[in-house]
Image 1: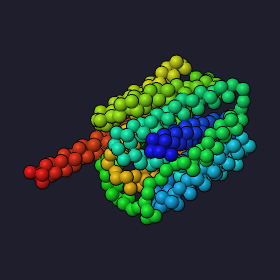
Image 2: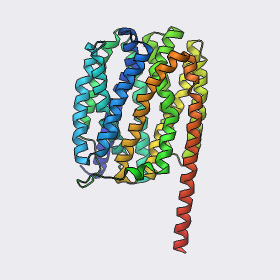
Image 3: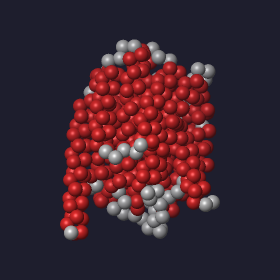
Image 4: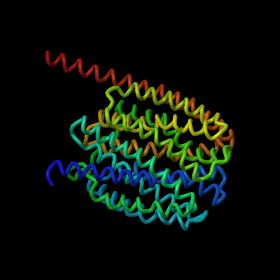
Length: 397
């Protein structure tokens, strides 16, 4: 293949793998709480705990294994994990209240090797504008999968059970496995790249973490208990619940489409807007008394969902050198999963203690504190860049 064909092939592989893994993973994450609550009659605490189990497996693989492997070994772990994901996914159809626990752990564990390596592959382009456009296209594909997946599942659930829906979605993990052989890995010349402390001390990396946490914390609550809120308080059907998630991801898609068409120059402004919209959406959701207001809250909350993730990975790509991006992306993804592991457990306690409505409201002060920390890191990064530019100007003079 010539360079143009090779580029197009790489982009198509990234798009197909991204779509398949995110659509199937989101279906798994949104259907699991409903399956646990209404088929296996788990308490709210156990619903949160089983979601925590899956996210914990992802965190262990991403932070403790994937981040420490050489590029060659990481590629083989990636391919083996993709195969395991393909095998495990249809087994949810025959799961029980006991069997579902190891299935969730395995599915979560292997995802810790799949997602960060796709992110790294999308960030390997040397030209900054091209790299950020591909990263925005990557996040746009995530949003397309999140719109299409719930819409398809909503139609499936009109005629089939929650367990049977896993069989329909099992084709997607098969696509992930096929695509795995075409995912590119950085050339590290057989060396294990170190520099974790350099990554974690980067203001751009820290800003990316605080930015994603301003949304991931409420999103974990939405993902675990949003559907249960709609069913318990608003008497929504399973089909309608999954359709509402499709609406949520529709506005997320619109946000990421805008970033793809016009990569952002000023990350600070969009990060601030995202936090404001998140707070407003949580207020509307917690006060919802009918399905219309609840739907509007999901539409509002979709916008920051669309912005925060691409803004964070762009911040990482701007502040971290290419050879250390696997470490940065692994740490970034694992911290996301750590939030995903802790929050369902905490959410279960909050819901048991405060009730669903007040549980959503209680997250707003946490988002505000994270935003203050985000602004501090953005200010430090700006000051550091200014100092470096002044130093370069003085040396040139």
